[in-house]
Image (tube, rainbow, N blue to C red; front, side, top):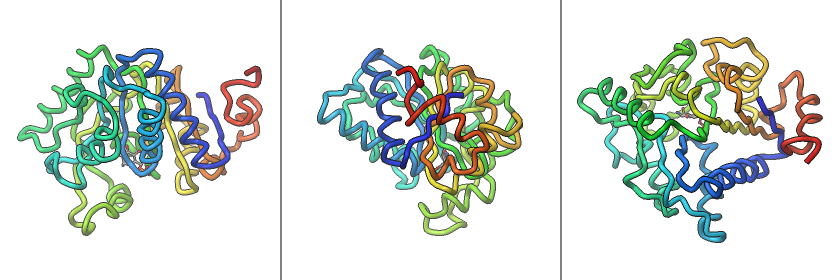
Length: 260
Ligand code: GLP
């Protein structure tokens, strides 16, 4: 894993935006795996700004989001369809026909999951997968004990994830209990992964992901098996890492290498 530690969340966002911009500029028809959550909002803002100010184009990009709540229609204000529309899609030139999210309102969510996995494969797989991390170490909605060999499917959300996401809903009871998520193995099949974590609330999960054993107890730890993962952290999220000084020596100031 390439562990890049930046001074604060703003610098971490800028660093992540550089990587996404470079990918899309080098390969305009990239297949991007997109994530939701509060951590991604400043990244989408930064990318939209680069679209406006620097002409960064997403016109040929294909996108697949990690997950969607079961039972919410795309126009539900708390759906990830709605989140993506508001946070990113409507601010850039991406072709709506090339954007994909799991169909949380499908009559048969498992069939919709199988179709989604097939669509990703048909697109040639994901070139760059963006990821956040849950406080309990989840990626996508792969909650602790999710099979490391899992593909897109229905997952039951833990109480802690529902509590963390409750702020977007009117009450805990209205916070969905189920989601469709791409699997841990789906994520590991991506060509490259870029995970962003900011804030002290993520520090424990970050240690388990980077320095813990590879274990379904922390699904993000499966990223240790992937050869091309970049983790971008701010100081707060990096605060509990045992080998923090080592990562800072290898990647001074969050640069790719000491030789840059
Ligand atoms: C949700 C999403 C995850 C995301 C996580 C962290 O549970 N399904 O993909 O990584 O939230 O969200 P935040 O960035 O708001 O902490």
